[in-house]
Image (cartoon, rainbow, N blue to C red; front, side, top):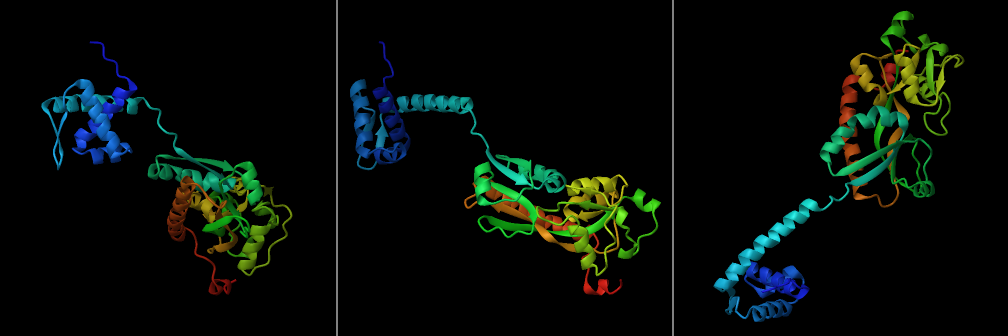
Length: 325
């Protein structure tokens, strides 16, 4: 006998399978998202087509006949095999991917070394990081397709959501080789202008000597003449020059902590100061779930970093410490 699995026959079999598993037309209907009457009718059509009953219909439950039990087992094995094969063949859904614009020096020194932890915690979330430091506003973010960003600046975003997740400590740093070649540096007055390395754009709109000026002001000392000190457009470049023994850079804790721990850079003059700028996580109104995970992770990592920073770097300058200069 030539029997083909027509669409109608497949629908009848599906209804029978559900009814046999649940022992109820009502529960089968809920699973298949059709009415109880439709399930009952399709099972009846299957029975008419087979010319034999598949259920004994009692007031409390459906009881499969011997032929019904046989068919139920065969169908369940067949449907399980089909579902398993389809699951193996189906292309996996692409992982949700978040795209983050980030200040380049922070991305290189702080963010990317920690990304392995993020991917271990969230294996199904992708994260792309782009090094950028231009000023953000809602129009620019929407136009450029930037969902979120990390910026080191003074904040003040009016049409975006901004969360400060990490403040910054400033401390002058130099290589051991540089310090070995120069007279001891025991006070801010011992710093010569030609030794100083400058990030000429600490953030967009910042003064060329912003970080050194701020550090001297917070230490209650007058800065030397700036002439002669090298200038760079990234903090990472100034720190690279310091690592090479070319001078003294103003170190941001987030960028120098590992070099200090490894002994490649030495913090000078015994006190750190708090920067006027901080790291903000900036988004448009409705960030994606993937980007919300990034935000939560950044807040957790920043908390851990602050603990480590306090253990490694000189403490913040206080009024008592300023009185000694």
